[in-house]
Amino acid sequence: MELLRFNELIKITWINRKLLSLIAIGTIISASLVSYIIPEYYKSKTTIFPVKLSQAPVNETALRRGTIADFGETGEAEQAIEILNSDRLSDRVIEKHDLYKHYKFDKKDAQARTFVLKMYSSNVSIKRNKFNSIDITVVDRDPKMAADIANSITAYFDTIKYEVVKNRANDLINNLELSQRKQNLVIDSLKKLMDTFSIKGVMSQFQRGYLIQAYAQSSPSERVHLKELVDANIRYGEDFDRTERNFDNEDGTLMLINKFLTQARADAETQFSQKFIVDAAVPAERKYFPVRWLLVLVSLISAMFFSISMLILKEKMPEIKNWRYNRFV
Image (cartoon, rainbow, N blue to C red; front, side, top):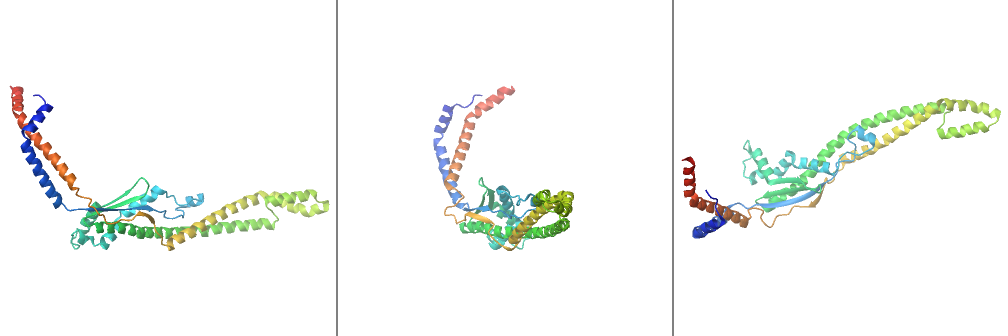
């Protein structure tokens, strides 16, 4: 059995041109009618940049390093997407816009919430783009509703993220206040130890240099009074220096704790915007779906391909039968 040549394809198409023309006209008319029957959908989009949650440390290791919370741009975007996709946020948007009624579900139905959430999820798209901002896209039959839902999502994101920030800040405050009390005890202990050295006449390393110089330049009678002081500094000088260094380190840690505690309290008490809106959603002027000309074009191409395939099969059927006969005889 020979393959179909191009000139044979042209011949079959030409011979059946009237039939193919009728099929094309019928397809165009049918597809056009269907395109007007299919419900129209509109799309609205808003883009936001999430901001950092807090500058307070999340653990003692971060506190000791003197670093702030380990959240970069990517981490903030991923966390924001998690909140934006949460049922907690979805339920508030659904309730505000009465989407049970809008999507035509009976709220009393036991599975109504499941169906509404499924419809909501299919109409809402939340994705992080290459700039680490987040695109929130909503599709709906009502262009105003699509824009309102998109803008409500960003508004409730602020509310929910603030609740997360506040809860996190309150936990941090408790931990930092405990660390603050412990640190004060450590510092008080070091202060008492330094006072003990001071009572014995022990001085700082810088002051000891002057003491040794004064001792070397003093008269024999003066050395009698200075010797006890010099001996005490020689005996306890290293211990004093080590204690002083520890005190400075622990005092620096306390200052860091106080800094982060102030930040955590501010996070818990101050409600500020958790995102920057690049573009707010507005009602679309043109429909998103269906694209009528594309629907007609795809239908026409499909119909022509199927029709010509059937005509070729009809033309080649005798050859196919003969080939099968010769094969098995």
